Amino acid sequence: MYRKYVKRMFDFVFALFTLLLFLPVFVLIILLILIFDGFYPLFIQERVGKDAVSFRIYKFKTMNDKKDAEGRLLKEELRVTRFGRILRKSGLDEIPQLFNILKFEMSFIGPRPLPVYYINLEDKLQRDRHRVLPGITGLAQITGRNSLKWPQKFRLDNYYIEHQSFVFDLKILLKTIYSANGYDAVNFDHVIPKKKAE
Image (spheres, rainbow, N blue to C red):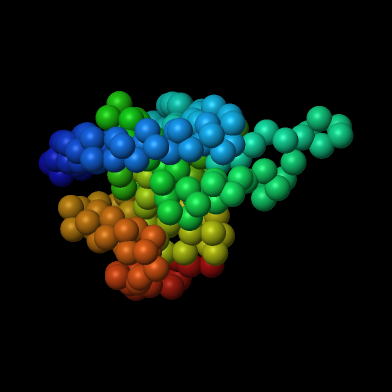
């Protein structure tokens, strides 16, 4: 019941409330990107969603499109703008994904969606992640994020899918909020049995 109906209702209502609450911030960020960076404020990319169906994800754009002499995009760290770093560090670059939630393409909590060009490289462990809607944040993000290897992230994603509940989602959400503010509110080190970790 929770997974199929209640979670979607919570997602929609909370996304709508959050979007209305952050609407002034949303407009301000758009204006600041236009003023300081001078490019289109939204980053739009095809990602893999539930049941491996692709959708267009929305984020605030944090990188320019500068290229080298041969016409290739520069490395990511060379293209992130100063304002873009602020948006990434604060997590405010994720705000436009509230529209993805309202369109029932994403959830607040779930596996992070990968770009569609990864779909041909997926094994069963990765494909199993598509059983639920992807999320803005998830168990892998609050457990180790970039310090984890890909197989560890995928196992955490699948562990979450098998153990979804309102309490589990609430803990992940609180951990996400506290981590963004430099706190360690919830410890998930015990969640995955050691034999499954790499």
